[in-house]
Amino acid sequence: MVKMNDQVKHWNELYQSLGDKKPAYDLWLEKYTDILRDSRDMPIIDLGCGFGNDTLYLYERGYQVISCDFSPEALKRLEYFINKPVTKLFDMKEGLPFADETAKIIIADLSLHYFSWMETQKIVTEIRRVLLNGGFLLARVNSVKDINHGVGLGTVIEENYYNVNGSFKRFFDRVQLDELFSAWEVKYIKEYEICRYKKDKILWEIAVKKQE
Image 1 (cartoon, rainbow, N blue to C red):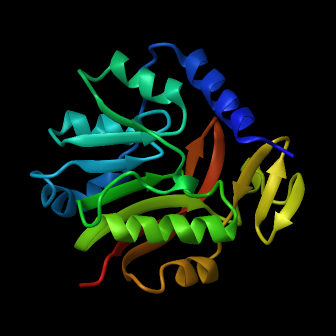
Image 2 (spheres, rainbow, N blue to C red):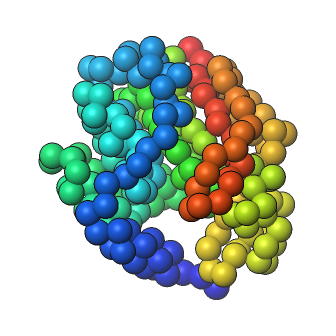
């Protein structure tokens, strides 16, 4: 059985290997400029900030950000290119350390596809709890068509969820996303291709609003 400490160790080593290398972000958040502007007076939560791509994008545009990850090294790296970043270290499976209705926007960019279906549902419920009425979750997740990044590889744990050499990976189809966000108002959803780790990657992007 793969232990959580092994997962943290894996990601810590990856982020340590990057040193002070500055993230190179894409511009997927550009289409949400009007939504982002509505959070000028309140920090945006970057859930599973990882390499720091979206955190850097937001900081460069003057937004307050709370960068969250379960890897201490991910959060430590932010100090190389952001002045005094605001960070929180926690595992999403244990809940989100924020009070009810305290955020207008939560971003989860390629960070919600590492969990069992039950864990994923609980995390989305927690995101909903933390968001204000009318608040948005902006997210990207693996698609079931993402064959270059683990679809069908490793040991099947449950439908579309695999243990690939000790790393847990989930892949989503439209039916699962519709089920996961059935209590939300879906404002945008699209499946498309980007380049990640020098390979083509197929993902889903979704913007959902907490219904008032």
